[in-house]
Length: 247
Length: 59
Image (cartoon, rainbow over all chains, first blue to last red; front, side):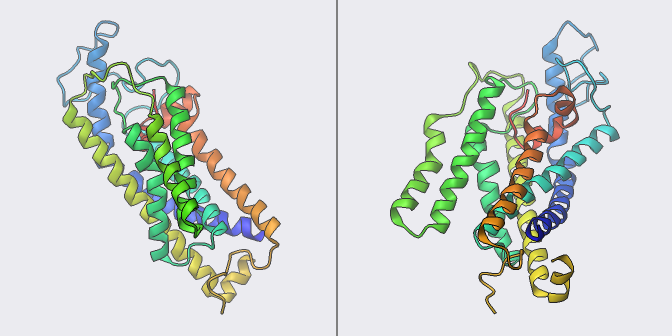
């Protein structure tokens, strides 16, 4: 189980680094926009809870303003909410790290931090760019199609894009490369589930800022993840003593 | 040295290598799937800002 242990070790370290970087970036790039959008969500709710809907820009004072139509526990706004967001980022960094490491080891491994940047670009393309074309990052209060249908399209797009990129990068054959391109294009020909109407209380410029913020923060996340993974991996292989201690 | 084909697992058979990597990859898919896709309310509420910020389908 040496290989499994080493992969988990590198994924944990790199994922933690990248996840913490992402959480820090989100706290000033994306989360403020989410909070701003929630004021429209609360305003749109109108009658049921009359919290006096404060003017836009000022966060609504409802304690659980972000779980408008759900009952049940939610972290309190402020530190608790940030803590859970950061923890989710760190954990998902490790999860994405495991996937990245597993796939890259099957294809020869990430040989250096520079090589890791390219793996990071691939991860970004697969997990952010491709699904984000059909299903742009959403803010609260925005209309959306059925949740399960969107999740199915999202997963299918990720798998098709990953398979397509892999065929192009690792199979040195023109027909297979063409198949790869077709796989990458296919989900967008099928098309993502869209809401019946795109009419939304959220202003278009706020949504646009959010799409840019999400895309760029995720790009940085993937680049850090790939580069750190490549750096740690090459240290593993470069030092026989270290390598032995983990073998 | 054969730096091109060096892997992290020293000398494992290719079947064992594949199994171990598949396990690691599945573990990762499980972690991300739980955080980003679980319909459990508690998970959704706790990870709300995270899900929006990673553009997972939400709500």
